[in-house]
Image (cartoon, rainbow over all chains, first blue to last red; front, side):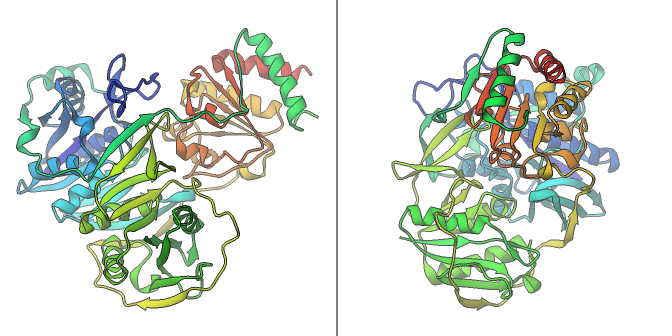
Length: 257
Length: 305
């Protein structure tokens, strides 16, 4: 059983973002980079499936510049078997359709029984890539999965809906699954596994070999949202802050009366 | 211009987001037609033409069949724009439809600027204005971003659609996540813990602040996913929606899904070390402080009153 997991490297969302020179994306400087949180669940689910189906072989794929190899290595250290680095520096200039096109071009005819992706990225957040990969490959897809079970060619999953409701869904493999937060508990790589990961196959493919889809949209402008007026910001010594907060609550709300 | 509005129904009820699609089309002065997999017993309040497939035959979630039906409507009506809610239904279906149409898809539109859709980036810290290159376009709209100005009304002209062949994804039914005990919607004060609390032991200080304010404590999704707080206290799209007199967000950055569940609160206090956290956009009061020191102190001062 062959499994593909698609991951993305994103900045830590706590960062203080700046706009880049072209005004169409965030500046890539002074950021801490990590694996897209949704993709950590995808990697973990693939590894859990391999623990169940011992003959399984997991390929992890990531598109980006040289620095994404750090994130790829984390996925290998978590337990993926081999990695594909689709090399391209200006990956943020690609729209989701093109990202999906690259993945599909790589995955076509390779016989992956399951393709796991995060349900969205933390930075762009389109939520399209996994579903579009399925469209390119004419595979069935289920998005927003918070529970996953597999037995004999059939995946039984729960989709997360709004308001605490879940939908139970069954799909035969091959299929694409997009992973929602909370699907499992992503493991931390152990030191021996980090060492082992260094010996695993990491193949680099230039993005140009796989990118065959033209964009249908582009970013005209990136900007900071206008701050809503009226909100007060308090800073300073915490004892004074607490007194000030209590005073404001007395004036503006009825909860302390 | 003509827009096709993909309305939503679940378990025989039309979902409110369907009316937000009408509000958005209204902003663009677009003509509309509507599509719904639902029930003729519960029609949306809409005065236009409604293509209706029976959810009892097709299933609430049957994406390949829903796509097939939508493509039939598009062939009939030839709309330039197809609008979905950015919901578990809409974001799942929209890429499938856009792909079949060869149309650009823009996800989670929150506004229009210079006639172009604007979407959030990086958990809402940034906004992106998108230039679409195709004539036909598919948008999903963020929940709550476009509100109908008046109470929706009207009775649709219904065109019934036959159920297509079932797709490869089999919908087996709904489950309600365990809810019980805590109805945050009834509390006049809700104090919620976010990822910024750092470790599970710190849930206690948030709970104590809630008690000192005569309220209940809640949590954002990451804290619930980490199992520091049980799911029945989760505030946000996938948990409970609350609108108390006072909402205190402790170490919550303000992901859109969380904001959707609490932004109607009467007074919002955010405690955060990050001055630029998106929660600051909707907070009436942003206290820039380390909550681990500030919250116990505030609690003590409240108790001493």
